[in-house]
Amino acid sequence: MIDLKEIEEAQKRIQGVVVKTPFTHAPLLSERVDAEIYLKKENLQLTGAFKLRGAYNKIASLSESEKQKGVIAASAGNHAQGVAYSAKIFNIPSIIVMPEATPLLKVQNTKSLGATVILHGENYDEAYAYAIKKAEIDGLTFIHPFADEKVMAGQGTIALEMLEACRELDYIVVSIGGGGLISGIASAVKSINPKIKVIGVVAAGAPAMYHSFKAHEAIDSVSVRTIADGIAVRDVTPKNLAYILELVDDVIEVDDEEIASAILFLLERQKLVVEGGGAAGVAAIMHKKFAFEKGSKIATVLSGGNIDVQMLSLIIEKGLIKAKRKMKFIITLTDKPGSLMRLTDLLNEINANIIQIDYDRTSTSLSYGDANVTLALETRGEEHQQMIRERLDKEGYNYKEELRV
Image (cartoon, rainbow, N blue to C red):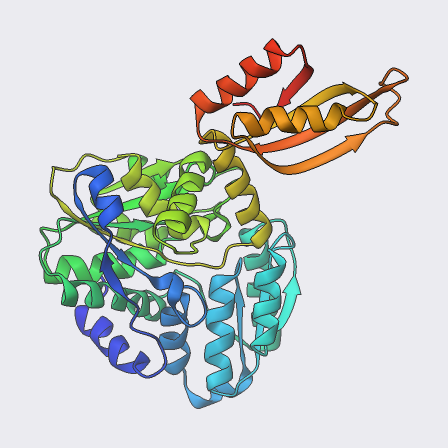
């Protein structure tokens, strides 16, 4: 357990640099799951994620000679920005090694903070190995994203802020990548109120910590694949596993579909942009992945908001399709004046809003004199979509439906 005094000292150290992010009740989510849900909005932190807390606490604790030599870190993005921002405050050089597939937004944001970015490896673990070697060769201080007591103490300040706002929580739900966030939070929580249950959440596509927790020994994954890139950690660090085994009450999994639905819910209903790792806790609550009593007070940390816009666009698109709010057809028409107008008039009669249309008369699959019209429609649910299909059938249209789930 990280000593509570260490976490309290970290809280003093980060004051004036790190934002005390909002901790608010979420009425819509609370109503949905019949419990009292609270959100700690670290997605609104200065660098868009909680990582600034641990990175700044660690760098602020370095000796002057260590600072002047510079720091290096390995990160999929959020720790990178935390280290780069902290190094900039102290006016010291920083190098960040990021996996080659890191979203462009995170690379650009890190560079904009003054860090030198090196892209290396297919995942975090390969970037980490390269950064460790470079730190040894160049005499740099490696700022570990999670297996460091100063970093964990910095992350633990989140718990102090949550418990200051609401002492009588029943559960705190925290996403797990490497385990630094939950180790710091659980250390503070169990020191202040050991009755509060701490639940860890991993992505099913990066299940190493889940399997390790259940087996009580480190079990690495062969590979990782998840939309929650911030918690896509392949290997388990024994130090963090020890903290989790000691302090965490349970570790559960959520899959990418559940994470995506949580991202979309937070965006549409809570007006919050949250990345995959940040939404994992909400996904666990929404889909009731752990048992809790009616009326329980449950807090979760929205650990980051640095989601790639292309990924967000894909999640929105798939979410609309699954909610039966969008459908897409390819309809074959006779290529003559009035054919398209007749089709659009029909769709107007049944209140199907056309949001995209494409007209193709040159495809080699078409008979001469025909054209394919591709239509994306905004709809009002399964009943409305079935009405559209029945009307097209009744009018004798030859069509193929896409995007149907």
